[in-house]
Figure 1 (tube, helix red, strand yellow):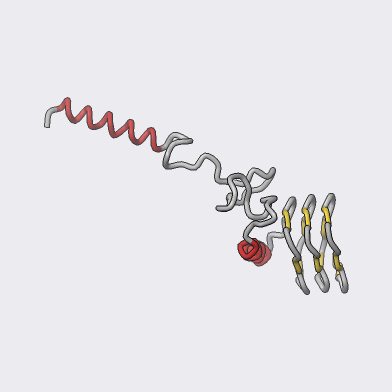
Figure 2 (figure 1 turned 120 degrees about the horizontal axis):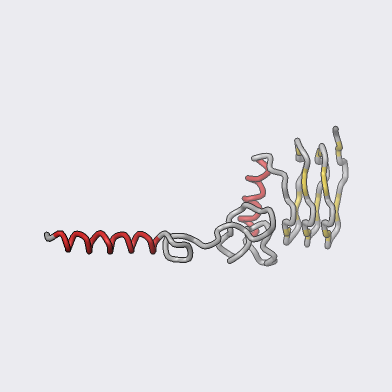
Length: 141
């Protein structure tokens, strides 16, 4: 193979590699993170912009939402800021070992916080469309 052909092959190879790694071209997603300010969650398959927690669609996948919520709570990640809860939700007898953040969260269904234990909680600007129950709430410090 002549040196000219080798040079052409190298140039073509470099062009292909550079195109694959330029943002916006095949091989790299332009935006894989939720657009909600401060959120680092990945965009879920039912949306082009939001994670499952911040997606305003009332018909979002409720099974996936519950699964992801359970994972967050198991990891002691209690930041629910701006989350949109489309239907009834319950946190029965849960113990939150550090501050819980529900600022700007929207609850469209009934919420049951009965029997939970809180160290600290922030519900600033949260919106409750239905009843909220705090029966037997335990606050510690």
